[in-house]
Length: 137
Image 1 (tube, rainbow, N blue to C red):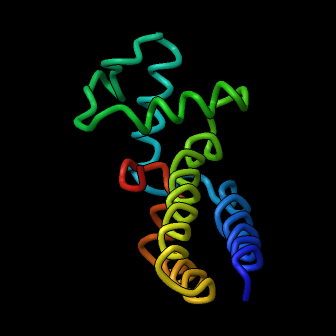
Image 2: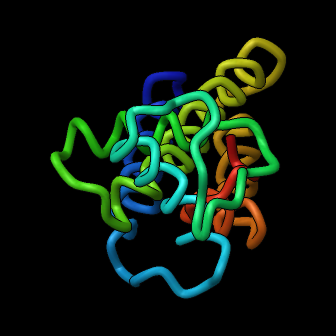
């Protein structure tokens, strides 16, 4: 297997597995809408440094995820499940490509591809890459 074949297979797998299922389900946990509410407060108030969440609660984690959600919402024109989950999927996408490049310099392309596919199909990685949570970023 050549490097270019392995890279194309990885890209296809990333597009299908991550970007293809972002809108499959509405928010189902308390954490996802909580993060999206902070991004919504940033959009509504214009305060991108110390935005408040639901009922005036100040978020306890750094706002990088919310900034990325705001950017995705501005590009798409609305804040919904897809724009809220897109930063996590994008982070997983970029990390998988960087990890693949790292492994390519040290091993065979087939081993690099298989290692990335194992990472991407592990349950916790897959769950975190499709959730609007701070964990992936």
